[in-house]
Image (cartoon, rainbow, N blue to C red; front, side):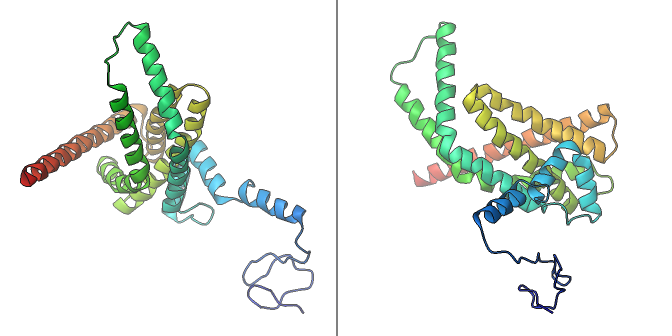
Length: 261
């Protein structure tokens, strides 16, 4: 009786999988056809957890959230991993194509100014370009970090607003999945905007809002009015947080500037 090449336990001669470790029994030699077949099966087949998780979160997000919280986890990518994959896809896109997107957007803004007869301010083109490059650099440098830091903030807000049944840790899971799905749409619409019109990218804001509205509404079995009200409270809390955070940063910067002077 042959042994499994992975765990070295005995297996039947005609077995397709090892009963002990679950590894597939491979008897044929490596060929180009086998390599391509494995690639397609791994990355594009329904066996791929990432694509299955993404598709499930698009068509029935509340089911994924409920199942994962109740212990159904094997068929889904873990929430933090799912979030990091989405953030990495977006970061890759921003790293290589953000400059193209910003140039397209600047060209449209200039055309709009010309259409409405808004006068150009001389000697500002270089300054605008420098500021634009600095903003792009900061976005790329801190994108993944900011994405991860904001998840606990989102979870705090949703746990306060949707207080029934689930604890804070479970809200971390919910927000990681929703934000990870939002990043997938950002990734897709970013490239669509490059090929069509930069303003197409702004659709992702409404998609993210809808994901929260639909996911939490279904998960907590809320009517449309209550769902909209709770989402509005969530957005208000987030805006207040951003305003306070920016005010603190400005205050700290001014304080440091005075201390240096």
